[in-house]
Structures are given as structure tokens and as C-alpha cells.
Length: 131
Image (cartoon, rainbow, N blue to C red; front, side):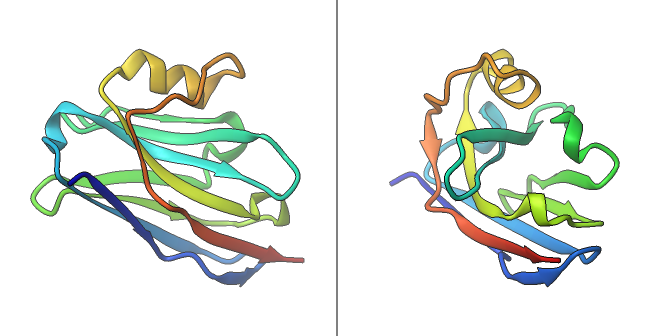
């Protein structure tokens, strides 16, 4: 059974930090691109970041560059998202997702053109940033 289990969401003040984790199981970790997609209340989903497990290449949406860092521990089949300098606009449910197509996931993260038909999804973890 494929599982993506997120953790680490919490309430934090603006300027604070959180680290999200995504533990993957049930598929070959190295064969997939894994990343984060968020959805704020009343807004559309947007790609945040992704990492290629095979070569550790990383990608970010413009609004989080310099503040968020994605990393992968292949021995633990876990992807992390370190979020610093959090802003109220970062408030959202953060979903971990996996896809076998790097181009697709990068398009989702870096443009408004990608579709959100990812291979696997987690259930999400809530991040709330207070002002």
C-alpha cells in the first residue's frame, strides 16, 4: 500500500520556522519526484517545492525561494521542507505528493500551467502563520 504521511504542521508566529516531514512507503522512493503542494482556505492549490530523489535536484516557487529548503533522506524514504521566515500568506494545508515525471512536477511548482494529477498524495498537514 502506497503511503505518504506528512507531519510537522503547527501554529507559528510570522517570522518563525517549521519543518515538515513526509514519510513515504509502498513504492520505490528513488524512482519518484517528491514534493509539496499547498492549498490556502478559499484559494487554488499551488506547487511549493519538489526534489528528485535520484539526483537531489531541487525546485521552488518564486515566493518561497530563499525561505524554504527541501531535502531528502533516501535511507529513511523521507522528504523534509524546512520553512523559515514564515509569512501569514504561507498559511495553508501542505500536501506531500509524488510523481514519476520530473518535468510535470517542476511545471506544477514553477508555473501556473501544470495540472495536479499527481501519482500519489498524502492527507496533508496544516500550517498556520499568525501575524
